[in-house]
Length: 150
Length: 308
Image (cartoon, rainbow over the protein chains, first blue to last red):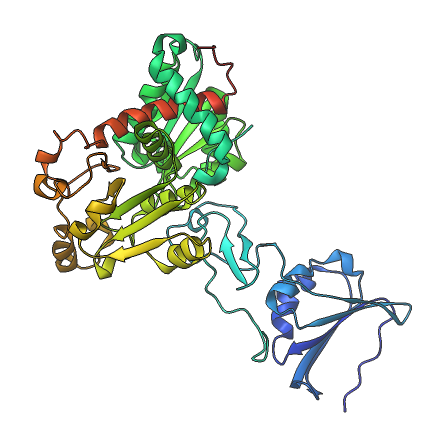
């Protein structure tokens, strides 16, 4: 088994659906940060069979982890300080997400207006429906979720 | 500073105040004739519109204000590729308030985020047309004395008609409003209005196909046009466009106090012979639309209103 060393300060994102770590890496814009990132892919998991793990050596408040809640709120985040887990973050569906998903309504102003943020708001927390702030079109793209998610 | 993007931007109480003001303006037009002296309304119409633009412009002129603007995207800097955000930043320097119609949904919201003056959504694609809803509410209130405790028939294209969707969403805030939804199977109210608005709020409604069946039970009939541009197939449009024609014969089935409303333009869904019926209120609706736009302009400009 391949071993990746523990991190001293930062956070670990566990239980990522196998193959999705790279997507989250990009969605969180980790490539823009001056920090070490370890990506473990296809690790064995009792619960999931296979899973991905991301270890990031930077303070968690530098990132918008709400995005992870939108992608899959079954992902777990452990905050590490001095080599110890100091916090387990509960992920919830964010009320608003900016520049993560794109409105596909061709009649929406986002299709032509330059420099406009793609903003979606949580319209129905029960049904987990997001709508575009501008045209209120329902986001119909796939949320990257596990098959056993609610 | 407030904008108007959706009919739900104002509470029922705020709308009552606005409709009271519209009534005052109707009764005492002279008292309001100079209230907006030196104020300018910019009508930013990126697509053609006759009634809405002229209604806004007349409303501002009636208040003593002035008008600037354009009536198509070709005659604006949008043709040169200017963004909505930049256009409104510039217009904010010239005018005191703006009314925007745009084919792209959400364009007026983008304008409001970048504006230093109040922005009114005068129609954004198939999304919202809040001043039509305010017009409809004010018409109902003026004709019936109040909004609520009534059965409203909505007839025609209930699938694509944004005026109908907005009106339903606005009317469920009033007590005891029931709906009879009159449409062919193909043009029924979409589930996101039926389930998320009517059923979720326990609003009583019934779906019927025949207009004759509904007419005797209505306090108000809201007719809509079947719009050619909504159909991919010309055959379907031709089949649907004459599905409902309200004429004098059918009006005999309706109660004496059942008013007929229509957002206009009408094509042939209301026969011309109905126009003389005292219950035909669709042209009066246009007039109420002008008064409520005057009241809206005064409200958004936070003008001090004379006591009447």
